[in-house]
Length: 386
Image 1: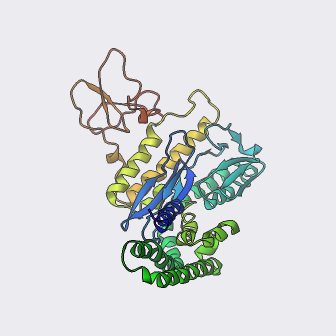
Image 2 (image 1 turned 180 degrees about the horizontal axis):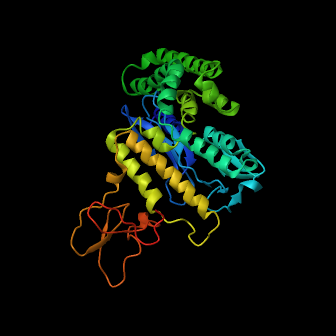
Image 3 (image 1 turned 120 degrees about the vertical axis):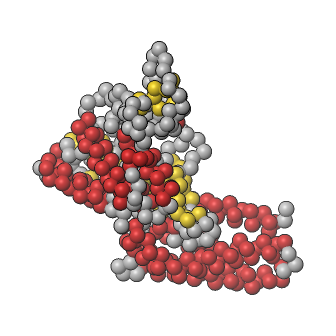
């Protein structure tokens, strides 16, 4: 392999790295594939990884991934738990809530989120709640959840962002073509004499994309200005042509950080994908056992949080012509001796001397089984959190 060919392979690998956003494992990417939006879970090489990555469409650079996430915390009118390993903190004992980058700090203890916008939205929603009466805390939390499930927000933000970044994205597309289409032509065809021309086009596109990106970030009142990355990331985004091709991703990744994944996906994805994604959210909310059923601390807040999230998930689905009850309908029995079924993978279980306690599928660990009862009904098994 020639040195130029090796250089091309290296550039391709670096570009693949630039396409990825490294996020917590729970985060999701709402991204286009061949022009159609879809939900892309964070990818990780090992189940032990606490972080994964979501990837925007490799071509064209006009299609970055929108990053959103289900929240790692449990919140209620009486207190909050920052994550599964944290203790419940009563609101009266919360002195300060703040955000720094993608970290949310509750009394100085950090919780890492997927986006800066998400961390900032939580800090604004939670700061000062401890000084409010319980009824006012509940009202403010409900207003915040309503805003988080506002499925009109992404339809308002996305076109505006795309218009503002379009000049920079066009220049980035020209740069992409110059490098990943022009360089192979020069390497493996007799057109090597055009090397200087292709190089000049790539250089001009690089400069144009960098200038137009920075200009979009500086426009007063623009979406890009509100979401602009830190200075270090802005410098890195224009320091090399490969990074400049994906510079606009830094803005797009923050666009939906304060919204629930379902509120982002519902207006964008196909009806079939929405049903699949919506069913997964419903099963998670209705049939997953609490992480620590024996711990009574925060149980009222956990029940409140689950109830409020479930109510908004169901409302969002209905607003987009998806029936939540139909998504959780009991499957047709494979035989009269079937007594239970898994709501996650729909596996069925026969009667036995000892009733089944859980699904045999390892991916369904933590989900309760449902007992077959009346046709079309969903009957959670004993100890169900529903």
